Length: 115
Image (cartoon, rainbow, N blue to C red; front, side):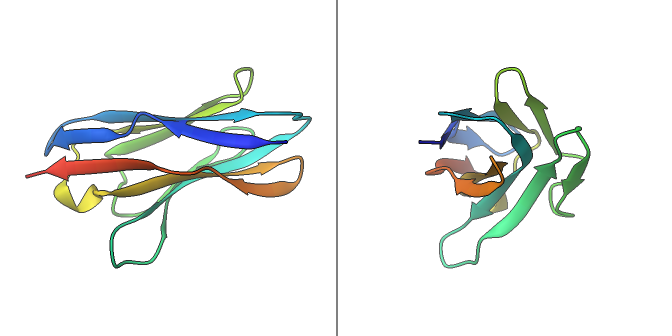
């Protein structure tokens, strides 16, 4: 059974930083495109950042130059470094991944940015 498990969320003051991790486990023979999404209360889920198997990245305009997505294929882990956090970044952050050519979601981790 493939699982994606996020960690690293928490409470931080505006201007601070957090690093999220998403670890894939189970019987994995192909770890392809991975991404981070977030959903704030009362809002639709939105794309934050994606990274291909080869490391090509894409970001939402709202997080460009503040967030960095990366991956360690040997560890089957994707990271999201979040700097200069703003209150509007408050949301549940979920990891999404194409694992063995199927889409999987993590359970999410809460990020709260206080003003």
